[in-house]
Amino acid sequence: GSSRVARCPSRDSASGVAESDKRKKKRKKKKRKSSEEGETSTREKPNTYSKNISSNNEHKIINRNAKQKIKEPSSAEEEARKSFSNFTLEEMDDHAQNIDIGSQRKVSQRPQRVGMLAGPSLTPGKAKSKKRRAFALASSSDVREWALSKIRAAQFRMLNEKLYTTASDDAVESLKSDPQAFQAYHEGFERQVSKWPVNPVDVIIDSLRSMPKSTVIADLGCGEAKIAQELTKNKVHSFDIVALNEHVTVCDMSKLPLPSQTVDVAVFCLSLMGTNLNMFVLEANRILKKGGILKIAEVKSRFSTTEGFAKTMKKFGFELAHLDESNKMFVLLDFKKARSTTAHTHLPMLKLMPCLYKKR
Image 1 (cartoon, one colour):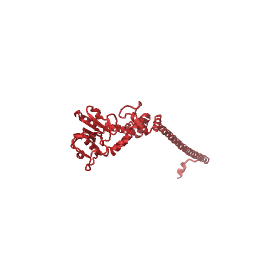
Image 2 (image 1 turned 180 degrees about the vertical axis):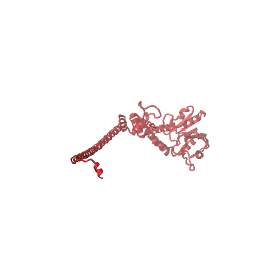
Image 3 (image 1 turned 120 degrees about the vertical axis):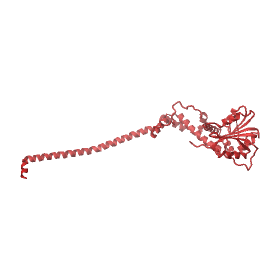
Image 4 (image 1 turned 60 degrees about the vertical axis):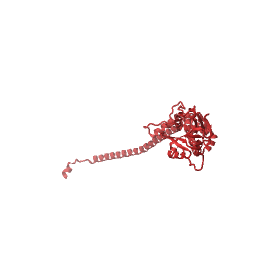
């Protein structure tokens, strides 16, 4: 123990006090520095937080302004909105006469981008913005034409339902006061049939061409009287509830202005409409000669079964001569008049399903 103490160097008391003071000063300096650093760090933290808040607020303001810019209507949208505000349903008939629905002409010379399909790579958000830009590029005349087409389609559905679900005399009276409504119905009907692969009236016309020139034909529910316009060598009586041209005679199909047994062929081409079909068929029986032909073309969905319909027609004095179900959209039936029949209590009710169009 004494040897170890002897090896330690002896230290002067004054110098030892000085060194201890130096160490104390150093420790104080370190403490002061650490405390200052802590204060500066605490001071800096709220500043960075406030900077983050201010930057976030700036981003929100920028995004809000961007959204407001998107929502701001373009001049084309303003023009379209003004045209809609001035447009009323009363104008529909005037414009319906001037606009050719079936034509493929362009209404505007500007690019037609309304309703353009978005690419598969676009996200829903991008697709919406693309449609919004496309609408902004559309002219007011394009938007007006689109609105008129929607109104005409709705009017056609309404009139079509009315013609199928009311008696023929009621339909005649209602359309007599509003002939332009029938024009709108006919245009809508033509648009629907034009989508079919084959028009049934063309098939009927082809079958009638081979008949003698002396054949007298009655086109019941003729529309624009296409049979009369095509078969100019034959005598063709064209009847409908409104006259679309000079070939058409206006009448109720249940009260035809023809003498009995004076017609060789009677035609119902997509025209067995209304709730009094019995009266239509009985009138056809009355005007047809014995052995005359009744041609019926109707939408397939209207028949529960064609066999059941043919069996019911037997009660009205008609025998099924030919049935053609080869067409996708419609059925063609040829009946031969076997005997004359008048209305009596034992006659069954002739029914077909109404052909109603859904809203799209």
